[in-house]
Image (cartoon, rainbow, N blue to C red; front, top):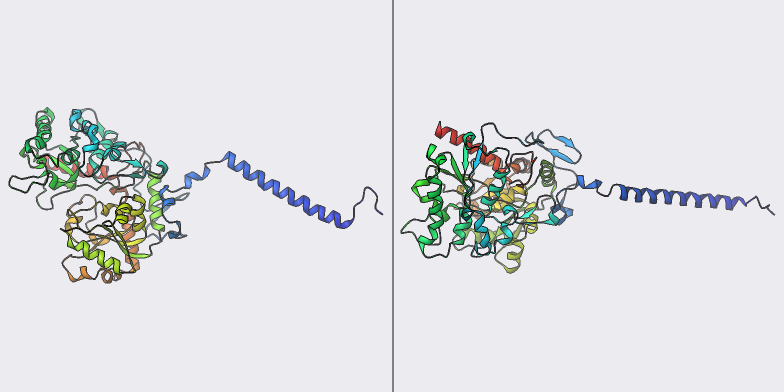
Length: 477
């Protein structure tokens, strides 16, 4: 028998293992609890925008695609160029004075937001300075932005811009923040032409009466407009489809208009600016994280098309047919009930584009499409069928070498009838180079969040102001 101070050898051995197991269990359990309560949000610095959780997680590469340029590493952050800074800066040649217009010309129009568009209740879309409703729990700078609110976003950005001056004597540019696009869409069904043009006429009279205008006859003045050029260029004798005449008034021919679609041949004082997409980052970190995310998306489809049939754009029907017949194409037909619903969801639109290598950009009601800028945001190489969809529109924003970031197929050519075959000719190496060029373009085609103070990258507003300042300096001096 064993004394009370002894144990059988087998019991000592088993008891030791039990003690060790309990000790390790308690150690890891308490460590986990300590980490959770002490560092509950430590991981958020490495999170990409919340949109990534809305897109399919399985279509990401484990490692980013190789990049042809040198990269700086900062945790999970990787940038392909030196365009990012951490402080708000201003180009020394730019100083923007913002007119304090009577409310009837801008903010007052928002009081009737339900009637600003004949097809859409614009109240949700004019919220947040035109960014619209926040997406994905209001994280990462994503908004359900309407394609026709660029004039509001531009206004909000310039008001908080580091190049803004309150002293007109120091200004090189004079910004007239008129919401002309919202006004004209509000008057589309106004049959009385005098009533339709009344606010435009009042605006022109007001500006012309200002001493600041008279100094250079308006050559240093500019306006941003959130609708296409034909909505502002009604001519007598033309078929009336609801347009205004703002750009046809002789008095404003000297000033510059920044517009989402310019006249490709007669728009001598018109300069194309991007349609707003869904991404409006407040910091350069948010921008770089999204750029890196774009590099990692798997793209199982060769090409895709998002759009509805158009009677005036028969080529769209051809695209829908070709895409529907190809296993290499992802089709989102906005003309069907299910497709119409999905086309209004930013996550669905970006899902299709981030799964595709090429995105077809067919003309619709006009030459340009907001989809072009959604495509760039998603890293999907745009395929154009008219030079007026981008090349003659956005010279300030796009590279001169159109082959570096896009594919062009003449819509009247035989190639347009065999799109898949044409796109298969583009090598994988070329595709990667073109996508990298698109990724580098994302910041300059994006409207940063107006409330961002240390954005750290040049967005669409910055590019427009720099280019406009150079233009104004030439015509005045």
